[in-house]
Image 1 (cartoon, rainbow over the protein chains, first blue to last red):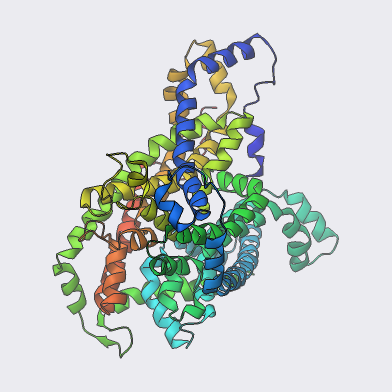
Image 2 (image 1 turned 180 degrees about the vertical axis):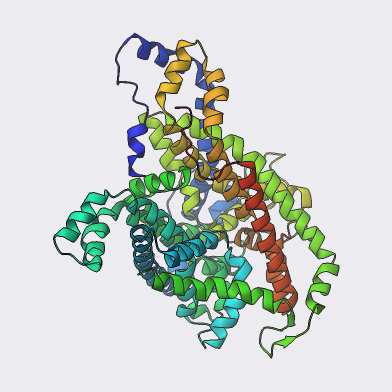
Length: 297
Length: 280
C-alpha cells in the first residue's frame, strides 16, 4: 500500500515526441474536468467561508450586511461568548474521550494485525480475522440499544468511560484491516533475520514491525481520532449530564441556546472544528495515502 | 496477541449484535425489567405504518445520494489523478468537509438556509429564499445535497488513488491505436475502476443506512416524517418513546438490509478480491 506513489503517471519520464503530444491533447480536452473541479471547489468552500466570516460579525451587522461580504470590522465578541459558555469543559471531555479511545484501540489493533499476518496457518487467527472483517459491516446504530444496556449494567452510564469503551471496539475492525494490509508488505527476510538474532516474537513486533508500520499507524490514529472526536450517537445515548458531554453534542445544544444569534453559532462551529483541522494539517499526507491505498486495493 | 482486540470487539460488537436480536423479543422500557414477550415487539414494528415509510425514505436517500455522488466522484477523481501542483491543492481543500462533524455541518446548513436570516434573504435572491427545511421535497433535496457535499470528497479520494494504479502502458498502447481521451475514459479507465466502483458504492450504500446525526440535527426527521429514515426511527422508538423492543426489531432490520445490500454488491462485482490490474 505504500507503493501507491510509484504508479503515478509521470509525464516527464520520456521527454520524447509521444509525451509532448499526449500533454497537448490533455490540455485541449480537459477543460470540462477543469471547470467542474473549480465549480466543485466553490460549492465545497462556500459554506465554510460563510461560517468563518459570519463568526466575526456582530449580531447587529449580521442582519444588514451582505452575507458573503467579509465583516467590515472584525469582532471577537462571539468567540468570547462561546468560550464563556463552558466550551472548555466540553473541549476537555472530547480530548479525554478521543485520546482515551484512540491510543488503546490502535495498540490492540496493531497487535492483532501483527498476529494475523504472522500466524497465517492458525485456524483461531483466521476465525478472529473473519470476525473483524464481519465487524466492518456492523453499524454502531444497529447495536446501540444493547450497548446502552451493557453500560447501564456496568454502572457506567453518564460517564466519559461509557463513551470510551464502545468507541475502542468500533475502531478495531478497520484499524486491523489497514494495519494488516500494511504489515503484509514487510519483507519476510526481515522477520527471519530478527529471529536468527534471537529476538522473541514480542520483541520483533515492537522493535521491527512497529517502527516499519508507522505510516499506517499514523493513518489509523488520525482516522479514528476524526471519527471519535466527531462522534454523536454514543455521547447522545450514553451520557445525560452536560458535564459529561462532548463537542458535537455541545454544538447542537449551543445552536438551540443561541437561537437566532447566528454569529455566535458560527463562532462555536469554527472554534470546535479548529483542533481537527490542525490535526489534519499535521498528518495530511499520511492520512491521504493510507486511506487511498486502503480502499482502492 | 490478537486476543485483546478480539475480546474487546466481541464484548462491544458481537455480543450487542446478538443482544439486539434477543431484545427484539422482549418488551423493555429502557430502565425497568426486561420481560420476554415473544413476537409482540415484532408484530408492533411490522404493523407500524411508520416502518414502510422509513424504509422508503432510507431507500430514497440511498439511491439519490448514490446517483449524485458516484459520477461526480469518478469525474473529479480521474481529473485529480494527474499530478499537477494545483490539483493537489484542490484535493487538500476538497477534504475539509470530511473533517467537520455531521452536527457542525447540519448546524451550518440550517443557519445558511434559514428562510428569514439565511443566505437567501440576505442576498435577496428569489429562488434561494425558500423554506428549504419546511417542505418535504425540498428538505429531502437539501439532505441529498449535504450528504454529497460531505462525502463526494471521500469517494473522489478513493477514485483518485485507484486511477493512479492503472498502468500507464494501457493508455500508451491505446494512444498508438488512436484512441482519444473520451474513448480512453470509457474503454480503459471505467473498466479498470470496476472494483473501486464496487468498493465505493458499498461504502456509500451501507453508509447511507447509518445517516443519523445529520438528519437528527438538521430536520429531526421532519417536516412531518419526510426525512425520517430507519436509523432515526429506531432512535425515536427506543430512546424517546422508551420502546426498546420494537426499536431493537428495527435495528435488526437495519442490519439485515445492510448485510443484504453488501452481499448483493459483492455478487455484482463478480469474483471477490482479484487483482484490479487484470490485462495490464
